[in-house]
Image 1: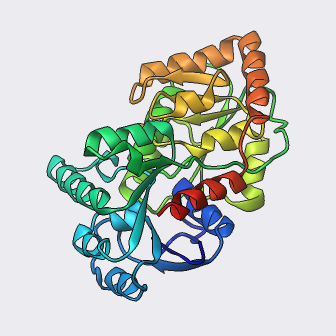
Image 2: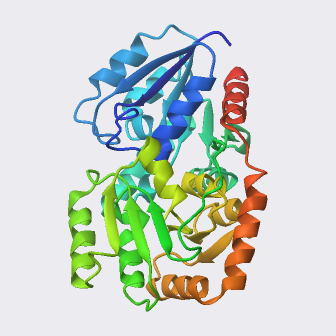
Length: 342
């Protein structure tokens, strides 16, 4: 395999909007040989113009391999499908478009139809977890042999010392409805125990939702206990993990949840919702609760604070899982193998 053309969202390297999808794209590109990268700044999956994507694909020689981020590709079959007749296209789906929280039914249905057309035309579809692969295969009626699993890798990290072993709480996720920070704030407001929670993640993706989370923090008098830290990267993110006793991911939908393995790499247990493949990724290293359920989040948090034996057991399991995490080079090698078969 000599050349791989990779088409990505334009914000892939924007430090103000870090995301699991962007991190995945960047790390895979770094590990693939012969990458020629194009990043397109549009409002994907509903771009104001498709001219940039159409031009980029038209410039690629017949028969070349193209890896398209699904956020770019899946909403515009009118551009992608004709190119599938002459290019060897693979589409990487981080999250099915219709699974984004807050869409109107008509909008979700239209995006779903567009995604289905795109994925049927692609020569390969790549999912980030076995759960996501099954979902795409069943939902869109794709041939199973077309859908491949290439899970994210994990960087080695030192064990997190934590705070006092119990009260340092951390949620790393974009501040958007799908990530459920509003539910987490309401659950935290019902706790009597001492705690401090950092909400680390981009604030620009959904300003109205960020305002709602701020209102909830103020309404419950949690201004001194819940910190909206904004996007954290580099040393700032490492410091946040180092101070965490428990990482919380209250998402309403995920396909993998890279925060899970980032926490496990540091030996930190988690409280997470039972969506997608999170339970199988987490194993016995955390507390799993139903999504969208504030009382369930409260019960999970209470069980964490109330039982030191349980906390020790969860930390022990997190350290066991830490030793079994795959590195990013394996992700790139798996991706290269899928693309080579095209």
